[in-house]
Image (cartoon, rainbow, N blue to C red; front, side, top):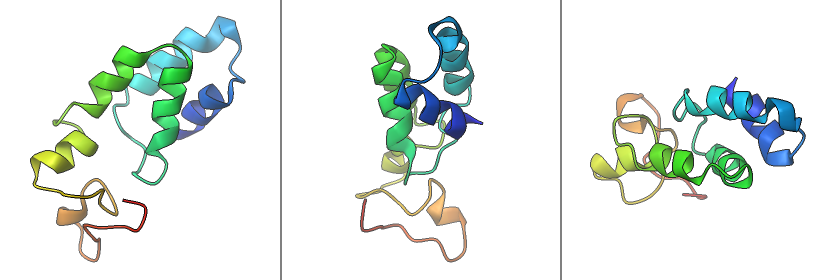
Length: 96
């Protein structure tokens, strides 16, 4: 999963020989992590020297993420990337 691999990458426990494959696996999933843990994905990409992949994911309004919710008029980070489409989800969160 993106989450398991991003956590391992962020923690620095992915062997050097596997790092490129793990980064590829993580980035091809776009933003599959929820807003509450998406910071780990950013830390993983930055910490492994893949800042352009980080920028590509964060700025892509066509995939779930901050750029998409901004394009939909958000002022804060939502409860989920698709809060407007889910009954009971909120368009705000204390950590947002």
